[in-house]
Length: 278
Ligand SMILES: [Zn+2]
Image 1: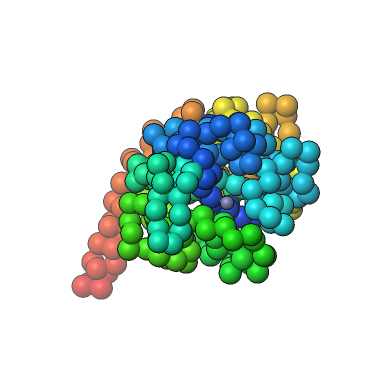
Image 2 (image 1 turned 135 degrees about the vertical axis):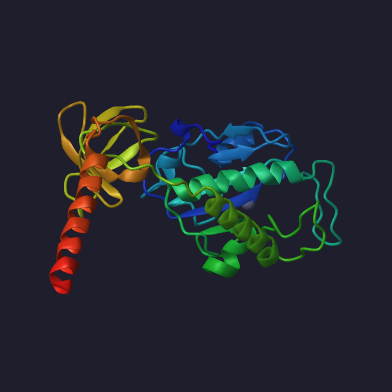
């Protein structure tokens, strides 16, 4: 299931996802929206932050999301709205606790980003703000998002909450694995998202095709396909980003041919047996 609108996920390289809470209310306000790329409100609604993910890609551009001290380059910032007035120890969640349904949407969002940006689920690449200092060695200012969960008080450290998040994201990614139907050469296929393309099979990305564009399939090679774009260019792309909309006519005599083959080989076997008996 896709929760994140495609335009929120520009085709740029990103290396990690850093997850936060806003320390605000369960609604995203203007200050919250400036700091993160994607926010999840208390009722599970998704809100797009003001910065685009591309502003944090490669080098920081004007208006980038400043969500993690000295670790914003190539980092997507996702935040759960809530926890204003919370106290770490003894733990008090305050009047705006993050909730279990909100957390479930958050897991979906992180899994979708991990899949889209091809980010592995490891403690250094998908982590909470509270894990940045221990896991990446980048000093933060006493950030404890997230070391405690209001709906599961058994978890007490950043690593425990981080590991719960990562195992849930990994499980979600596994359940999302889809069986791809074959796309034959000559088929018309449609892009299901923005697709990065390259001019050679093993080369770097050289362009992209927007979502919902029809292309003609020229070559199928495992998980790669070579397609002709509407502008007439032949490019290589990841097969998973396409769905077949129209295929070439299947040969109608395939079944008859294979039956004929069986009859032929049985006949030759019978002849060999006859020859052996005689
Ligand atoms: Zn944070």
